[in-house]
Image (cartoon, rainbow, N blue to C red; front, top):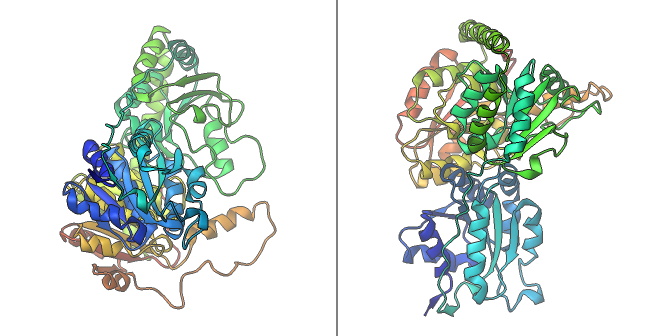
Length: 560
């Protein structure tokens, strides 16, 4: 006989999951205590449930295995909903466990109880409350299987405390691993190939499905084969295309006019792993974001994203990397116009060469300007070539230069949040460092985002995780001011509303970090950037660099 909680740890051992993230509460204490009996699983203590879930997101993204979170009844689950939403939108595998009151008390609506299954259902692939100990092997197997099955995502389990400590002879089931390298339907591939071979000016939009499939080399080959410009979808959570290739055109704009103009220049658009289909908070009520003039082709492993908003002339459901080979073979068999393709590739290469020249000139200009430009921070960081860099992004209005100027070695070198609920990056950096201790983790966040969960510093310090936290402090919610400017295009003019600045009193992020046990420094002069980055990267422990960028920043960086 053994206690039923041990079944969870048998599953973690089966999958090689090394960490359990959480905030302590009485109903889940048996699960936390279980880490003592299973030394292969380490309990990672955090000070807020949303940090626990964010750290599990980072671990899940890096490993492809579910990050596992344990929180306390209704308040704990509610505190973690923002990052649960982010994980749901980004298709990150999680098993989110809410410790529940004793099953014998639930009907009496005890302290802290609520229907947490309903609370989480809309942001999970499956949400379930354990009914009895006998279903535990089935429930655990289903939960972890479902979290890992493509498209991946979070699963929620409500576990009454009495059902985690009950004596049982049951053993955990081995978790079913579902193969994901499924090739798309060949007739649909042939139809897509015919459209792409005949295209006069094709474009490709790469979504997160591309990076998750590991399809960099195949996509680069396809772009060269058909002479296509490549855009990342807006709000990409990973790097979906090698950014040093001349076909790459940055992320799509996040405004309606910009998205229409960008995609309207193509006669055929391959929407590959596309999921950020309406990546804007302000809409002008105009025509479709992808113009009707563009023929749309879909390739995705997620049928929900295929033709969700815009009908496709060809639609391929399958693994992206696996399906691209047959697609390229089919295109080659159509004998496309090689002269036209060469001309398009040459034109894209010329634009890229000019872009590199423009960046060189821009960096020279901002070296002498104040306040500090985020682009100069990105440039200096890129020049240092940190080993195995993973850039964890919550810079919001400063993201552009970091996408272009950093050395990305693989799709997982970049990480961001698709849900756009603030407060994911510092926590996720913790989970990523635990999952990939040999890689350099640099988290860049705006001051607004960095204020959501500064308790993350404490966990980084407690486990001595050498993460470089960079805070871009402009003492305002710049993204909101830009949003207000966009709204003014079709809304009445108003004076700047209250609540868009973060000053009076002004905040000192180095002091905030120090209160949680993390050293840091503030930088105000551009000439000090390189040395400060070197100190932070070599600290051998968590370190905070606060860059004061208050005032008018030259953010007219080149886009190509």
